[in-house]
Image (tube, rainbow, N blue to C red; front, side, top):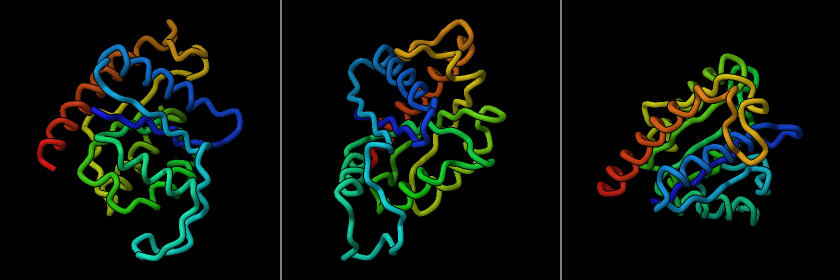
Amino acid sequence: MKIAIIVGTTRQQRVTPLLAKWVNNTVASKYPESEVKLLDLVDYDIPLLEEAPWLPDRTLTEGAKRWLTDLAWADGYIITTAEYNHSIPAVLKNALDFTQGEMRRKPTLIVSHGAVHGARSDAHLRLVLNSAIGSVPVPNDVPFYGRVDEAIDSLGNITEDGKQNQSKLEAGLDELFWYANALNNAR
């Protein structure tokens, strides 16, 4: 199974990459047969979307082309994101707006952090994914409890402060892999 872990923030001093490292470590130990790619939005040159994404002759930067190619590669997604102003980061919404079917009929697990554990960004991201993007958000989200920078060390290992999150992530991964297998067989 090919899984893309998306880091959905680009701000300086962000902690979302720690969340992605923890997720990556957990996927590697729980599902060692899977292939994982880390897609950090800071590594892509994705401009603001200024033209309709469905136009056949739209112009894409090399970074935007690479983003869409990397999304198309995956059988499922894990989006790690913060909550900004009761929603998802604008950079994540913009990147998702570029899609044209790359995520359609593929499952997504949302791992969020922030005020009220990222629950509002989680709810908004579900709406975005269920829209024309056509991704299937799995039932088990992972709202992260605690401060990410205190609950996850620099290598992506969960600390004592974050232990309550591990079982939630593992349950979410079980759902993601179940849906990825089912939808992969149905596509």
